[in-house]
Image 1 (cartoon, rainbow, N blue to C red):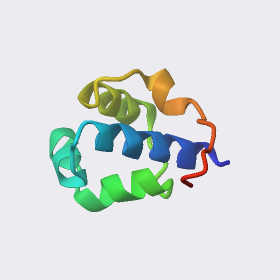
Image 2 (cartoon, rainbow, N blue to C red; image 1 turned 90 degrees about the vertical axis):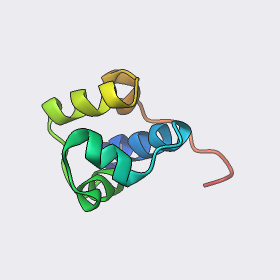
Image 3 (cartoon, rainbow, N blue to C red; image 1 turned 45 degrees about the vertical axis):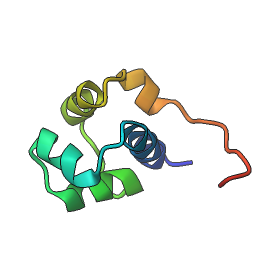
Image 4 (tube, rainbow, N blue to C red; image 1 turned 180 degrees about the horizontal axis):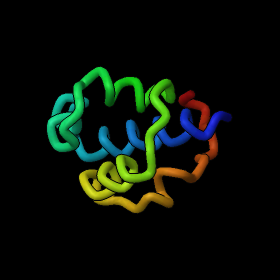
Length: 75
């Protein structure tokens, strides 16, 4: 899987686990909601400084956002 899709999927999963909307995350990062959507889809190639900020807002580590998770039956 493409690294940017992995990162985007992990960001989406972590955001949802925090009960946060794309709009709320975007506001915290000074981005548009569509930018967050494109990051989560792996379309926008997130730079390291933005990845760092996302990790802080989502209260996780950059490493957790980079790890490819095993796919389960729900996908």
